[in-house]
Image 1 (tube, one colour):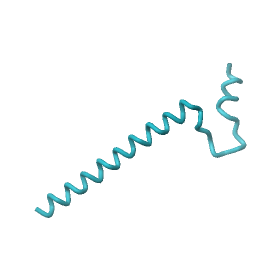
Image 2 (cartoon, helix red, strand yellow; image 1 turned 30 degrees about the vertical axis):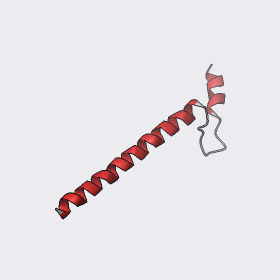
Image 3 (spheres, one colour; image 1 turned 45 degrees about the vertical axis):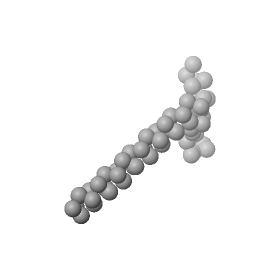
Image 4 (cartoon, one colour; image 1 turned 180 degrees about the vertical axis):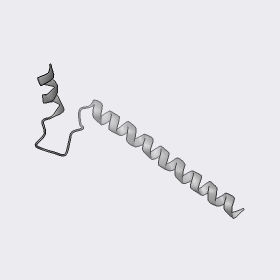
Length: 55
């Protein structure tokens, strides 16, 4: 019985982790579509400037 309860608790924790990953994915995608993502390297050009060069 203890093994079953332990497995159930592990499964619940995994479900919570998966839920958090889904929330993070949605957050990252939303920020990407708003143009809020960038690199941490200030020496690199912004994606917008690179896109202007390509076009």
